[in-house]
Image (cartoon, rainbow, N blue to C red; front, side, top):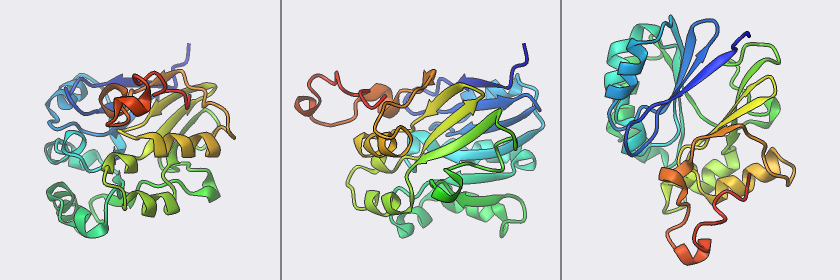
Length: 228
């Protein structure tokens, strides 16, 4: 059996970190956890020669603070970073992790930094990651430009998490960061035409799926995943 990609879910405690290993021995890293120790231990046991992208779903410590140590170890292999804008630009620019990435990129000559955002013209396809065929595709399904502006007005920065879908032939893996109901409602309209999004594997969002602060609104959280 020809394995197109393998997905590893790294135990970083609170927060997330995932690794996609492609059959050409390249990888994509989605979030680095608050510490990258477990992520680095995993990669020490994998054979890869290129990191196509490091994707930071949003700027919360438990998703990004491991990035500087990870970058220090693997900078020669990293093509670039895709980062969300879950808050106004001034807040991103003063984030210590962003400042570190920006300084290390040396005016984009070492690696590029780009925005993690759905674009309608290519249906969210991340071109430098997808393999140019219909076999492997990595897409951003949330947020788009307008949603990106809207979420910056929200008190809950989790609402700005980038949401990714990995498609390998007919299989789908969803990486939702810590996205909440705003994202899920938008994804149903955008991807599913009002119908549930079909996935084979899902990383539970917001620390195992608590998507609202009020248990009453969620009716015991039973409807957390109705958007699927």
